[in-house]
Amino acid sequence: MAKTESLVSKEYQTVSYVSGPLLFVEGAKNAAYGEMVKITVEGEERNGQVLEVSEDLAVVQVFEGTQQIDVENAAVRFEGEVAKIGVTTDLLGRVLNGRGEPIDGGPDVIPEARLEMMGSPMNPYAREKPEDFIQTGISTIDGLNTLVRGQKLPIFSGAGLPANELAAQIVRQAKVTSGEEFVIVFAAMGITHREASFFRRSFEKTGALARVVFFLNLADDPTIERILTPRAALTVAEYLAFEKDMQVLVILTDMTNYCEALREISTAREEVPGRRGYPGYMYTDLSTIYERAGRVKGKDGSVTQLMILTMPDDDITHPIPDLTGYITEGQIVLSRQLHRRGVFPPVDSLPCLSRLMNSGIGEGKTREDHRGVADQLYAAYAQGRDVRKLVAIVGEEALGERDRSYLKFADEFESRFVAQGEEDREILDTLSLGWELLSLIPREDLKRVKEEWIEKWLPTT
Image 1: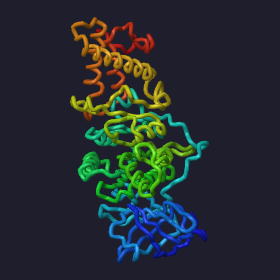
Image 2: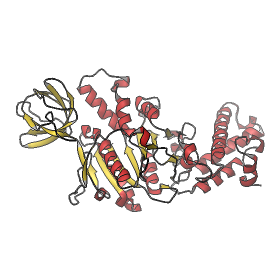
Image 3: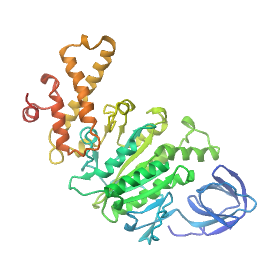
């Protein structure tokens, strides 16, 4: 972005007051929205960004926090450019803070280019339809809620559920149909030191760290830095995908912490709150992150997003999962009940969804019977869950033979199909296991699969 007359570096000592993470600077007539700022306090320099401007007032969010800032002595210098990050393939294998600065003790990064973090919307006409199957090795995803290259798919988790372990397993196992491995851009927002250590150990153990760009904003790091973290990560991802033709998988965790940072800023600005105190523009803000996934015509690379969010009180109607579900192309929902019973990954298949599944499966991609098997498994599992509720009322002794077969199917589905531990399953193995389970229910109930498929793949007893 070229500097103009309105973006000229100038210093002010007119901070009027401080509110939470925000500074209010009077007389800053040349300030521009999104402009980067340096704040000097008693020789210490902090970073900020212009959040709002009016005729004679600029609101600046301070990434390192506003503690111990004396309004009388603070000097604010407007840098004349928006937030940028240096990008290069040398970032692979590096650990960066939430603003994209190396924190792993390695050598300085010499960028090939400096790009604006805020990015720009992808031209809808230039978008390529996502339709390439991604094998994650996890049956509940590959078989029932298929992930497609260029898709954005959230994982709805709850406090204490193993969403991080599931994400790490996907990072280890994910590959496209050609067998090409993904480059991983991992953005952690507000996670604990224990969670950060888990991810680093997991990446190092499998050798994946060499193809990971790790953005790390810990729980004790500045809250406001979390606003930049996903945007810095996605800028690097877009560079690797569309300039270097790499297949990039972006993991964003935890989006709940990001939204809490949004709410903190909104409260400090004394804005009228929306649902549960979150700002009314949260939908728009989240869309500027999620919509940066996709494929571009004429480019071999792609950006696929998996975002993890912790549902407060396991409430899927909470504003964060609710708005995320509107923007993204489905959801993977984790079950606390399955987790308590030791099932891993504890994916609750019934509320899960992948809106792009049909584009990535079928003959030539997975197998011709994939859609039918998935539909039949869903129907049988739903029936089995209903029978469980009936058993709680009348007891298993009162069930007929047909209901008993569905009850057995539900148990076997959870213990064999859902619970796979850290096994990396091929998609054909997943489909074969699905047919084995379907053999437990009456053949006349197999109405969602073609007769020729039944003859070809249904195991005979």
